[in-house]
Image 1: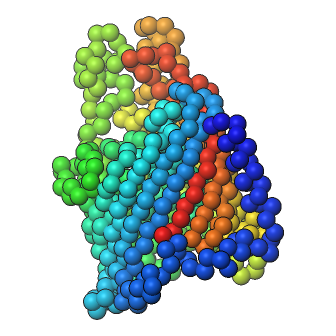
Image 2: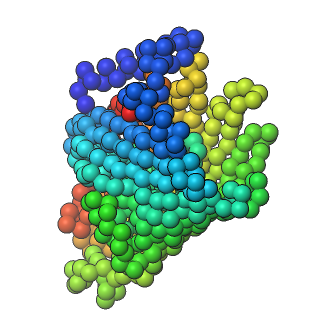
Length: 440
């Protein structure tokens, strides 16, 4: 990113935080009274909503620049247009407790990770191959006085599993669907930008305890349109137990989850004859393991309440996940951070700092040691981390602007590249970004 662009980002950040506290959302709500950019469509939008039909959309566009480190320095622009429909089937057709949801994406532009950084953790949570594709398409039925629900159709695990309530502020993809899942699972698993056929059940065991579980297609293939509902027979299952309580009279959420995948996974060190893949005598074909599995833990804690009645203020999150090291590139995930709602007297804004850590597996580290013993020193795989500082400003009821700064530590995690074993992306990369999101 050029120095001029960097100065503009800095100036914009100062303007946002220096706005008068009494302005709230800069008084733009007085100018743009509608909650959506396109208004009420001449009264048609509220008429449809009265009938249980919500049609909506949003556009996210961002520019990200790598000022240091990675494969090369550069800047990109990318965006994602989303259109979605929600239908309350009780209002629309008299089917009590049933709702329908569908959404589609038009993904455009070029991602910084794929174009310039070459790191493991995708820098942006909207980065994906440019395409126009269906994402979710499901029905959900509430049961037993809303104590249980069943969702069936094409669904995404990252909508409901392994999710922290305080992490969505951040742009780095790992604070959403963690890199330990997105990197290790075939095609990233049932998560953006690929939802999969499946079913999810959720049950409230008590007012404070809930259990949810889901079963998805575990197909390795990616359909670029999102309309391929078939499966190759592999399955992905995930479950999560959640408990809400209070610590020091402040809200606390605890989640414990686990998952399994029935597919084949390549060994990180050995070939089919049990020779190291670094050995010149190796056939170069990695051994395969049937199935993979892992678990995770999440804690969300409100640390300080803005006022006596609110559950907003300063929140903290911590997520920990792990899986076997012999068949996965990443064996350990850890992230955490702080987010604060309403900084500088601006109730609709948020600011936060987050740190993630992805430990490269022992299998990869052993492979590098094998190569080093046979061929001389190579960089030892270790970890990749992201430190992110982000500020989200609600400048109108339908418009968000978000300056963002990321420091990518050990991009690529020094993972061994057998075609160029001494390749090293460096110690770090600095990424500056500016995102804007508009509700249509």
